[in-house]
Length: 184
Image (tube, rainbow, N blue to C red):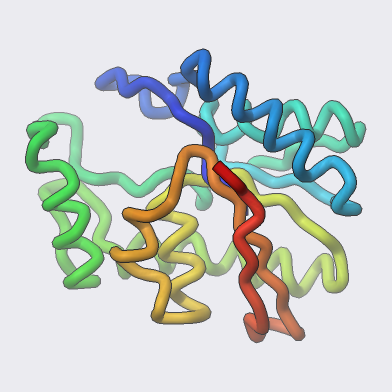
């Protein structure tokens, strides 16, 4: 799991916003860190910041990036609902505390998890034994990990960095180990 590098927030540009200069630098570090891991496949959210974070690795390994719409960032609210900056993290915490909680037009943790986790099962079943990089977002990554181990929740999410990398190991579809690879 590769959480995307730093990306400056611009309202209305969720899908297309790129990386900050620091994010670009750190995406090169992602490439350096993962280039010798024996990666077989790279998949990503279709959002630019997630794809840009793993793009250098894809180029270095001469692998395509396969996009999965269901790996996109959580929809926090519809475009007409304004979340003030000082309230954003409180609202996200509420979403982690109550899996059914959602803002108007937004996805609850449960709904987001129900769309993203099937991608993981598909990858595990169709590419058994392969090493796969998943370029994704903090909320989606945490909710996918949480499905396999409930210890990955709010406290884990707030400790993650941009970027961040977690190596998940499976036996079949059972999570057996998680190792943080990113060193900041």
